[in-house]
Length: 367
Image (cartoon, rainbow, N blue to C red; front, side, top):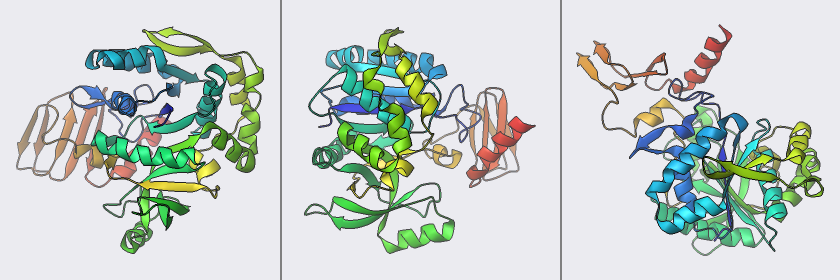
């Protein structure tokens, strides 16, 4: 299995506004059982039983809530899992947000510098997705790890259930194993328009890109050196600088100071790992996911997690509405609405209009 897990926990909370915000992005929201998205990701990492470290990379201003969510999770764990969190989980607060390539190459250097090993096989998890059942995720990850230790860069391909326009797509190439559960990626595709998405799904050759990647530290560095030298060069000298100084925040280990990281972040461009490596490498493979997956990237998706409204609601001659509110809400003569009242702000949207929320947030900021 993978030796190390990296969880990306940045984000600015625009798509699920007003329940999420830059100060309280989606990963801190709870859905069921009082467990947050971030805590679910940590539990997922523990289920993989990595022999090495669990690293959470986040924005510097989110250090406190990330540490709190990790420490409050301890009461739900058994003794071995608690020891793993206390001994082997590290939070790395980024100097400034730089998309996803920078935190991943940073994590590779952190592991190589602090915990030298013949090979670090790394799985990248997101902090705000829903994945179930965990047993199938573990089984698929074993296949992914086997490919990674053979020098591949691997992601999870999600079977599309609809012609979604909010996800990137993967075009499947030749199978790598007998049952076709691992295959070469012929091409990565950007988020399509509706017509193109319908063509992708109808073809049967396209899969959703989950955004989770597996690789070894050495392979990622080589790919960046070949395809994105500006990023590679920005971090190349980290091993020559002072080692990271670690401390404890709310009982959780974190990188307190690391001047070499600060210097690298000043130099590196901001680019997603999909753009810097995945779309350019000839070494990309995918594991066909047997687990259910959703990135809950909209209120339309979020609503599906609930059987009833969240908050006191009165409905008069109204139908097919969802309410997620801190305040009592009365609905009169309306249908097909999503109403969210959180953190002193209100959102009223027609179902299916989630793509407009980010634009609304930006316009409110400008006004």
